[in-house]
Image 1 (spheres, rainbow, N blue to C red):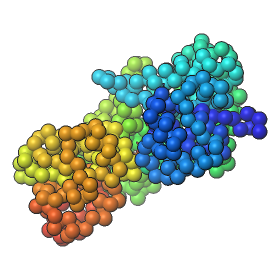
Image 2 (cartoon, rainbow, N blue to C red; image 1 turned 30 degrees about the horizontal axis):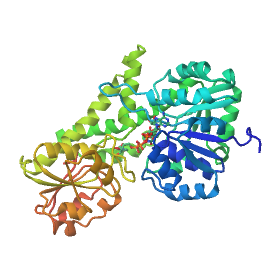
Image 3 (cartoon, rainbow, N blue to C red; image 1 turned 135 degrees about the vertical axis):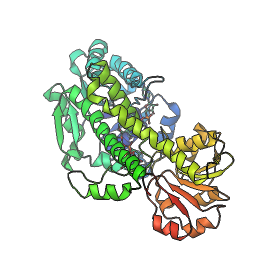
Length: 443
Ligand SMILES: NC(=O)c1ccc[n+]([C@@H]2O[C@H](COP(=O)([O-])OP(=O)(O)OC[C@H]3O[C@@H](n4cnc5c(N)ncnc54)[C@H](O)[C@@H]3O)[C@@H](O)[C@H]2O)c1
Ligand SMILES: O=c1ccn([C@@H]2O[C@H](COP(=O)(O)OP(=O)(O)O[C@H]3O[C@H](CO)[C@@H](O)[C@H](O)[C@H]3O)[C@@H](O)[C@H]2O)c(=O)[nH]1
């Protein structure tokens, strides 16, 4: 097949986003080269081991490697020689000491690749970046790429959710193509052909709009979560029940129930840093008033973590120091091992800082949590960490926590007290088993 029919793809940055993209594209039939500066990660992937916990991904990695269509490298020379379309999937974390996004990895990737691009190629940014980044990088490419104007930049933001990354990649709700020419759109269509055949709609637009769609989407989702959590604060003040309130709102299909689950709030490597970076960028370009509400969304979200600690203190009669706390969950959400800005670990660490003896269990994120926070204690199961506990705190809504039998748990704890930080337990059932049950925003 000629390159225009089936372009060869490189995926630069093989973390949560890039590893998934590279593996899925190879499974869809493309020849793919994964590129990263992290030699250990590349060696792992090449040997068939996924560096992250993501359901379904290990099996697809094996399949892709066996097909011979997927390889990994740390060499940008090799990447430039191999690829017709280069997807940039490197991290854009929050800068230390600022709300701004750190785009230095994106810059480094483009600057490392560009000098080797001696034939026509499309460089496609997929990382989440401040609006204006793609236009600036267009200049960098023009300056550094020997193939000159034959090399073009496009922006194609990614919307996958961790825990559902494979399905979201194969069957995305939409593909956004921020392009500067028909040629770039054609290349992108060729690079996503099977996904388009599955029926994914395409929005073709300019670079700035493509960058903005991503942060606008995450801002909307974060706002929806903080909205219901703000309602939880009001409910708590008057003894109302935010769960019933959310259920009732959700029945209006103009509102809908998705991202309307009250509780400990959002964390992870995306929503918190993306709303901050967006607000920061809007201020930089003089439209800070348009996104100032995102500052409030962030504050509401942070207050949920503090309020969860307060609830634990209330259940303990104010005596947090010396109390034994079983913390269920470390990952920022279930079906992930990602602990970036995880509300669960922030609550656990705050309680530890207040003198509680905190023991943490998580089905997938224990390794990451142990490495990041060695000062906390960890255990091997939900019941294990609950032995002798004065209070159990459910912080991440893993299915296995929902399924714990209140009687079995009651037999190992010292006191039957539970804080349901994610509104997933049946309050009536736990109270019937003599548990003191508390949840944010519920009587
Ligand atoms: N995690 C998600 O679910 C998700 C979803 C959509 C979009 N995003 C966005 O995608 C981007 C990547 O996020 P992530 O969660 O995959 O991050 P990550 O930290 O898991 O992965 C980033 C990878 O980039 C590599 N890298 C850094 N500099 C490099 C360079 N110069 N050359 C090659 N590789 C380099 C790192 O070694 C790492 O493996 C971010 O902008 C994020 O906001 C993430
Ligand atoms: O009703 C809800 C829904 C989610 N959450 C929390 O919100 C956070 C984020 O959840 P989710 O959005 O499912 O996780 P991510 O994998 O971070 O995905 C978001 O961030 C990605 C990276 O930008 C985007 O690609 C996705 O579209 C966007 O949903 C987690 O801590 C959840 O516990 C709630 O508290 N209530």
